[in-house]
Amino acid sequence: MIIAANLKTNLTRSATHDYMKELQRCVQNSTQEVIVFPATSSLDCYDTTVTIGAQNAYPVEKGAFTGEIGLEHLQEFKIKTILIGHSERRHILGESQEFIAKKFHYFKEQGFRIVYCVGEPLEIRESSKDEMLTYIHKQFEGIDTEYNNLIIAYEPVWAIGTGKVPTFEDIREIHSELKKKSSAPLLYGGSVKVNNVKDILQVENVDGVLVGSAALYVDHFCTMIGYADELEHI
Ligand code: PGA
Image (cartoon, rainbow, N blue to C red; front, side):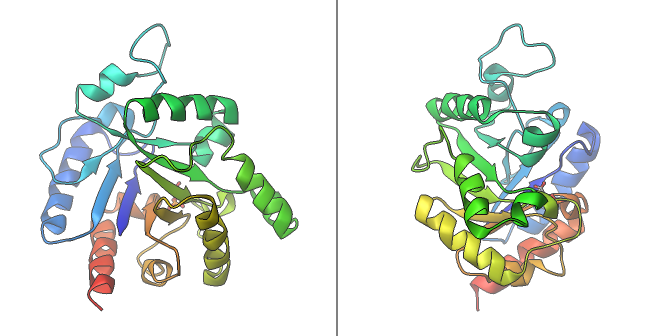
């Protein structure tokens, strides 16, 4: 399974080093694929078997894009994994589908592992199932869903950082729809915690989780990885 941590705008570089040291201890005997997305200023060469990914980068090698980092800055740390389409970038930072698709295309051309996020806001969730699926399908416009280095993360916006989670049946249903769209591994994200991760990982067509706030506690994240190992040995 794929167990990923999105650290968002948290943990300084020195705190991330401590985090990674601790995490390395617990992944040593794990068979899970573990990915950590540190804050941009915490990108570094970490002494770890865990994959380090970028939360964001501009689709360019380098240039005049104030406040952004480009390919060159990722290459410095041998980073080949990137998160694209996260709801906070779509809704807070205002990234359009067109720009997201451009970013996707650029990092696909560079052979990056792309964790591509989709998910609906509450008002769409409360409309019909058809409207919800149409909304999510639009988030695939311009995206090569058969790219062989792709991971998709389904993250309902209303579940991110809120403590609210869809029912397991809802997750199963939407994941089975998304599996028709792409054969890529499919993660669930949105208020994944130590106390619900085991159940979520057992839902059909859930290939892993993308964890935000709960992953800030390295012991919680390690527990989740341990649960995934246990489930694989059942
Ligand atoms: P959360 O965030 O676990 O805090 O809900 C998930 C995410 O944004 O990827």
